[in-house]
Each structure stands twice: as C-alpha cells, then as structure tokens.
Length: 237
Image (cartoon, rainbow, N blue to C red; front, side):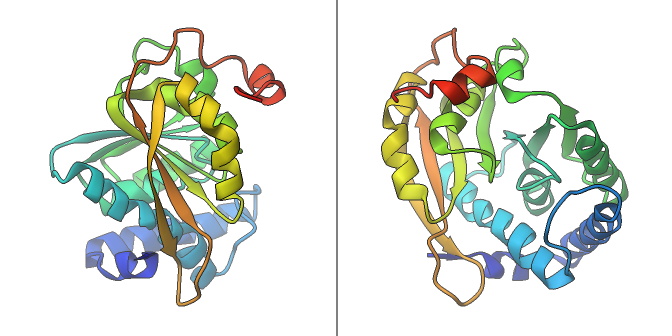
C-alpha cells in the first residue's frame, strides 16, 4: 500500500515551492472559473497533489530508470496528475492534454510561474490526437485521473502508448467493477492489466488504486472512435 503523503514529504524544498505556486494559482483562478470543488490549501495538497503523486512510486517501479520518459496525461483538467508528476519527476517529458481552452490557459500559467520546464499544456481531444502521427503510439506512459469509466478510458488512451509502455488509470471504489467491464476493451486495444497498485492519502484506509495496463500489441488503426460512439457503444458491452 502506497502512502501518497509520504511521497509529498520526500520532495525537495524547490519542488514544494513549485507546488505552493500551483496551489496559490489554483485558488486564485478557481474564483473565476470552475477548476475544482476543493479550495482549502490542505485539501488541495491531499486530494490533488498527494493523490496525483501516488503515480510517482508506480512509474519508478515500472521503469527503474532516470532516462527520459515520455508521458501524456489525457483529460487533465487543472493539471492532475500530469503537472504534479512533472514537478516530482524531472526526467519525465509531460504533455498535458485538455479539451477546454480556459483550463489549458490555466495550466500554462502554472507551467510558466512555477517554472515546470519538463511539461507543456496542449488543447485537444484525446480521441482525435491519438490518430495524429506525432502522437500515435509515441509515449512510454499515458495517465488519466477522474475522467471516465475504464472501458471508455482504455479506448481513449491506448492509441498513444508505445508497445511495451503503460496506461495508468487512477480509480476509486468502483475500480473492480470497471475492470471487469473493461476486459474486452483492454484486449481489443492491445493491452493487458499487469497490476492494481493500492494507495492511500492520509491515515485512513481507502479503495484507491492505480490500474496498470501494459501495451502488448499495436492498437487497431480504427481506434479510438469518435467520443459519442465510444460512450454509446463501449467496446465489449
């Protein structure tokens, strides 16, 4: 069981300062546009920063290297987990993908003011970018947190992943049910589940986990489909 709070506590002073900037900007901008329902400093640290940083342990375990690792975070919203992971792991090369322009602009402000040199924010839709030759099967890692059910997520995500790379999906209490329902979609998209890494934020036990899906074969060229089709006719259902 990963204690995500311990990951935050192990950060350097410089990294903590970057998160302080991130939190300040999040609270400022949240008054203007709806970025998060969580507004207190301690809540932001626990529910956004620490929760995102559970992925640090998973990535370090999967790759065991300090060489550059390419990561795309889809449906990143205010920048979670992508920008948080970029702060914590300097050897990541992070592309944070978000469809809403105002959220992308916010992320760019965080990148600029917190000086997160290894991240960039891109406006776009995952189901479209996954067909772009510059993105198709080009990334070592894809992440997604609080975006959609797993059966939908795997179709959006696995087209980005290199064979041998991983899709990491943050999941909560419904994780087991979603995994069971997504098996056919995972297989169709060229993946297999290798592990479910449990984690907690704070002292209380929880049902939080990161589902690790390895890309074992190329994704068929027709996937992902348009989002409306994915949502209406999820693979395998």
